Amino acid sequence: MRKGIFCTLLFIVCSLFSSVILKAQDDYKYEIGGMAGTSFYMGDANKTKLYRNPGLSAGIIFRYNKDLRWSVKNNFVIGHVSGNTEHSGNKFPFDQQSSFSRMFYELGSQIEFNFFNYSDNFGYLGTKRLTPYVFTGIGITFGSGKKTFLDANLPMGVGVKYKMKDRLNIGFEFSFRKLFSDSFDVTEKSGNFDLDSPYKIKGSLFKNNDWYSLTMITITWDFGARVCPCLNSD
Image (cartoon, rainbow, N blue to C red; front, side, top):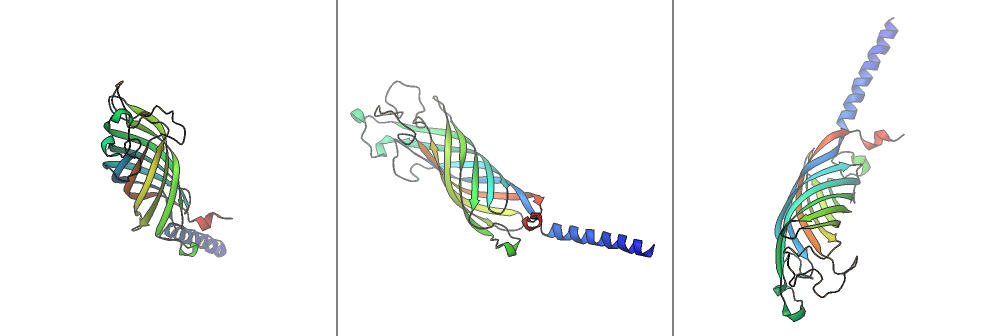
């Protein structure tokens, strides 16, 4: 009888001790937060200059951390871009000029790869509180204006993030969004000269298409506990 009671108590103590260990080694599976920064356009009205006519941009982030290296990030971004051919350095037919200004809205998803195991726990796994990362994915961009714009985009970027404390992350990222058409810089419904194929040369996947870029500071908050990766391996 006493032996049975002792075994029961030992089992309860061990269970409580295991719970404490698991809780102490919890990491977080999800992040939510925001980002803000600048956006600029590259296309017929700006072929080579970074940060020409920069606009403001902001958005929200939801990130799923599959493990310490791989994450899936979803974002919604609102931004502004503009351009003017007078300062583009391009020579257009009959010296015609054009300018544009528009708000854009992006919904996208990216896969991120951290160069280091990213966490403030699990030192035996070589984790770091600071890591650079690269990302790519797919998105949809809508542009406002009298002539609206809707197209897929291909994001390509780099970033760095730092875990300031248990749940708080701060980051910085720079990316280009490749579009698959040449009318991002066309906001007016007009038969006159515009920047949709101004040389009347048909574009292709890698030619005569517009781009835009985002430079963002991010702040996210962790939630959704998960068990330490080492405890999942059998």
